[in-house]
Amino acid sequence: MLNPDVVGRTFVGAKEFIVSQESITAFALAIGEPNISVAPPTYSISISLAESQSLLQESGLDWTRVVHGDQRFEIHRPIVAGDKIICSSTIESVRVLAGNEIATVRSDLHAGDVLLASSWSTLVVRA
Amino acid sequence: MVNAGGARMSFDVGQELAPQIFSINRAKLVAYANASGDQNPIHQNEDFAKSVGLENVIAHGMFTMALAGRYVSDVAKGSEKVREFSARFTKPVVVPADTEVELVISAKVSSVEAGLVKIDITALCNEVKVLGMAKATFSV
Image (cartoon, rainbow over all chains, first blue to last red; front, side, top):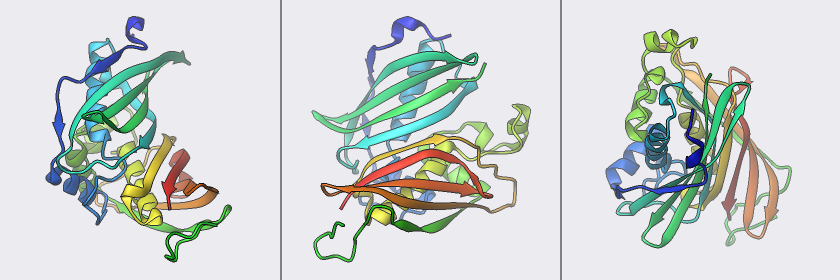
């Protein structure tokens, strides 16, 4: 079970992600997107999901039983090569439905003072 | 109706947008795993997937969503125009070995306002909806 004390707290990632052109190109190629001048709209998941995983694991959640329930992105400015991104994660809610624990994690991706994107992942821990 | 800078791009509420078909196979799941960092073996290893009760290897929900995002980028005429994008992962996309699985994405315009177009997206695999409540907003 998740420690309820973590709900509502924001954890600022210690690691700065420097976005490489190679990583944008690889992501675009994997989905058949010809435009590699900006990152595809779901690219940020490659940063945010790893951060959410480490946060939730540290908070007591069994990642091996996690299923992705839903996902939402709000994009303020596309990610481009050279962006130096800090990801902060907030566990917005935890509830139990039919014995399954359901956590919603918001990830805010900043480059300096600029909020590039926010995303929300709903993660279901199968009972 | 919105016309962007004289370009032939206009959207009307209720307009059906032409479907696109995306082909998914095991090699593409490996490429997506490498690009996204999600190396969960249920997306690559058949024995592992079956050991946890799945029918077979399944696509990453985020890969299916990324392909729908590619569709949105095409409709919007550029990834940089996409402002909001959301979906529920309602059914898994099962990807057997040596098989091309077809994902059919289409959409309908739900709103056109203040330079922003909202669409409702349908993603079908073997005629089953694999994304629920899939929506996107893009600028024109």
